[in-house]
Amino acid sequence: MEISVYLSALALALVIFNSLTIRVIKNSPNKAFGSVSILIPMRNEADNVKACLSSILQQKGLDSFEVIALDDGSTDATANEIKAFPSVKLTSGERLPDKWLGKLWACQQLAEKSSGDYLVFIDADVRLSDYAVANSISKMGKWDFISPYPRQLTSGFVQKIFQPLLQWSWLASVPLLIAQKYSIKSMAVANGQFLIIKRDAYFQSGAHAGIKAEVLDDLMLARRLLKQGFKGGVAEASNIATCHMYKNSMELFKGYQKSLWKAFGSVPGTIMAITLLVITGILPIVSATLGSTSGLVAFGLIMLSRIISSLRTGSLPNTAIFHPLATLILLGLILFSWYGKLTNTITWRDRAVI
Image 1: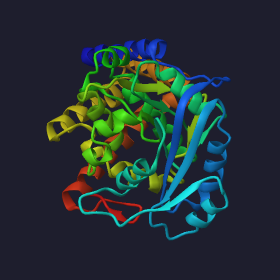
Image 2 (image 1 turned 180 degrees about the vertical axis):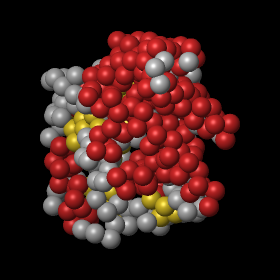
Image 3 (image 1 turned 120 degrees about the vertical axis):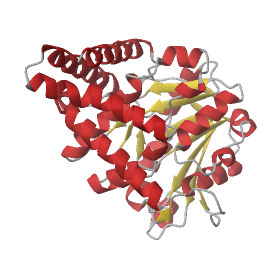
């Protein structure tokens, strides 16, 4: 059990370090200079259009900005909902080329139709505060890209206990300040829900065309930018942005199925990740239940790291007690994702995932 204690202590130390050093974007009046293009890919997002575009159009503190929404072959009323906002430029997505994933092709088209110095990619289920974009650009400093991480909204028991694990996973494993200072590609963290990139950096790095078939597009785009010598990283943005990724548990399962097989790099990487998850997420509570003091200590350390992570990212700290159950769900999803990959049965938004 000593290994569980050591790894749990390391996770706690990293969470504390990152919580104290991560760039935090505040919700306050600010001014950002330079033209901005806010780009929203949409496929069957009729229910999200009004709230999403309303929050975007209320942005303040920007010199000038354009909003472009792409209707990516929707079969619902997405296009009609967008047309209700005359100031939003509506474009229809072109036919999906071979070996492209749908969202990546949509983002590529949006970028090509844009004119701003800053390209702001926003998912349709994201909601922004009034100064969200201005504050995010100001927080970039000398960075070429920034990934403001929204507060993740949840509904239902499974989402409430599982989604906070997402932020904890990188807060507890990546020394962000070091990774960002030295542009360590293998430690890149990014979230495509809300991503801002300087125009020149985006196109010089190859744009989305350079990662056209990557299921972890946000992470791979960040790595590509770093490889080309550009600077950037993730920032804590729970005060300025929210995202409700999934409507129900089935959507959550399908959403993670499409990418978890790639999340750890390879089969050996997946085996290593599963081993670490069992050692820190399952073994401590089992050992503690059997009377092990070391198991109880390890579980307490992980619990504390989860609570701190939740407080830093705007999640519910009381879900930390369910960490072993959330870990079991994650282990199941990893296997589910690999099953889909090996049987070529992964789909997302009615499209096959390469």
